[in-house]
Image 1: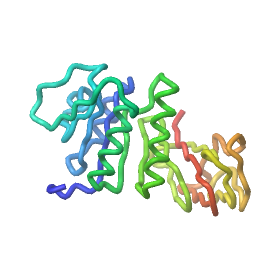
Image 2: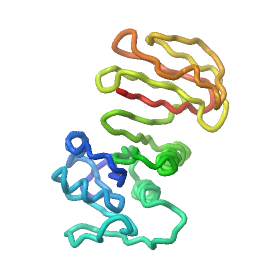
Image 3: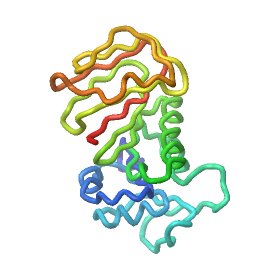
Length: 210
């Protein structure tokens, strides 16, 4: 990373047409990887990706002055997951995935599993659009209401112990949570900030404006 960019933004190809949000999130200080047709969204937002990766089954391979990695159409990993793996290989410690929440439930879940892959490699990763932000929590996080007004918590893939929520309308102290339980959905802020902590397990934190 000769340009000393420390964070990576991956632009996927989900049909999220909020280009204004994309313009706000994309920045020249981040390394931008486009997953397949995600490059079209980058161009519409006024940015040329640093790297484009895809099999180009949902778009035409571009003739553009940037690095392109062409993938085979038949492969194990999705284009977005390949981008995530490439970002880790390049040494980035923080990744934000945009345009990855769409109409296909299987694609949405597949992208959520990218969060777990990053967590297992000690990399901070989130998936966001104008209405939602998804990330995994293992210890403590403080969130505010500046961008999203509501939040939900789910035990991700395994049981959670010692969950505490402070500063929210609904607060809990040192409770356990199982993956099928839904009592921590649609919470909101009592003040400007909320602290969420847990002793063990993994929490899927979903912030939203819906």
